[in-house]
Length: 395
Image 1 (cartoon, rainbow, N blue to C red):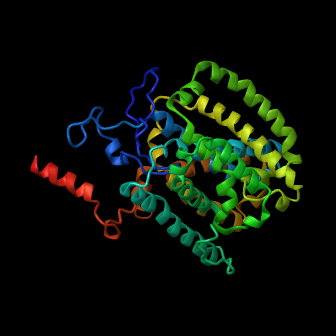
Image 2 (tube, rainbow, N blue to C red):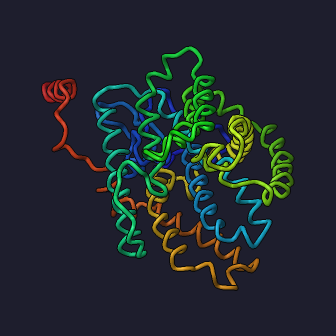
Image 3 (cartoon, rainbow, N blue to C red):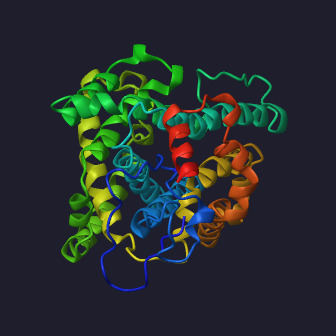
């Protein structure tokens, strides 16, 4: 959903201030553009104030999470042939999107209906959704040969559901900040969605509602909550927890319908009784939180070689989907050597390398017209912004 300029020491990096109007996750929107982030430490912002620095922890977390997304997609065709791959797939799908969404909610705390933030919501979420929903549909129809693929902005195809969900979550942020018990209310909505097949597929509302508690949890979190999971004792405790998750995942993988982890269907649509929807929603919410905490505990806190890639996760997320869909249609995974242990390792490395390249600055520059369009022609100038420019000119 930018470089961190922190030195390579063991000091804890401070978390971003509450008012940092950074975009969702994965999102390239932030107070600093990638270019600005390469400035020297302590560079002054216009007006003489020090420029806000990005926290390496969150950029590292976003990059690592998008790598896990790519690995999950790469492992999907292989999980039927390898129980170990299926175990890893199950564990990763338990927490990779919840981790994204929690960070997205955390950085949405300052969102309100201010004109500049609404403009950013349109240019950073709505426009990419329209462009990529159209591009995916045309790619599926013209390149992959699926002639029945229609272009419909009401039916998100493949990865674009996240942009629809992010728009809905961000737009309702003021409401979640207003109610007394936001997280219990969001959980109730998720439970109701999981037992309501009548919701249908329009705008992928099942996912919007079933993933909603993670976004609201992020809204409710404070910097000290992230400091808690980054303590050494939590990191040590996460080791046996992850080991237990591997054991449970190995047992459950062939016995459990993986569609539960996608949160896109009700219980009835998965062939389960209605009450199973409520039980699985609560159970998966708890498991996702535990594994997400373990993930955050091991995310590096200092600037790493991949920290700058955290600003390009939306690029990696949306662009790697074209390769994934092509690999399915053109049967890249049907070769016998791919389904050997060595082939599975190679597929894993290639998937991680691909999404890494797609997060780099050259790719961001190439596709910025679609991800971060300025669209100054489409919006009126804000009166407050004009007044500030006049004041600067008179100073």
